[in-house]
Image (tube, rainbow, N blue to C red):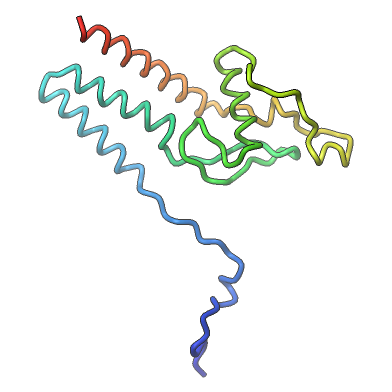
Length: 164
């Protein structure tokens, strides 16, 4: 007996599953950063080193393949893939991420609208995990965002110094 003669539907094991497109390996990015560091050392150029630092900061802010990791009201982390440590998977999760980034800077979000009750909160009347906790950044994200921000400030200072 031959299975799937002329049928275009997937086998039963694959039905309903969503295949995500593959992403480039992080090793490609780290090879680029190593090449920039090697070029800066070879050329003895602090300007090329600043360019490499700027590329790493851009990578951490906007290009690194990562997970959303916003907590649901029940406490489970969102496993949707995102790109960049500043971004989340959807508008509701992005609002929580923006609030967390403002808190990381030590400020309240000036663009935050009045706190809206979540739909699930209205049904049960109980919030298991509050929005402040749900949007909290992990220690790794916090550290790398702060390092990338410091690197960006360093690049700006180095650029202004280079104009003298």
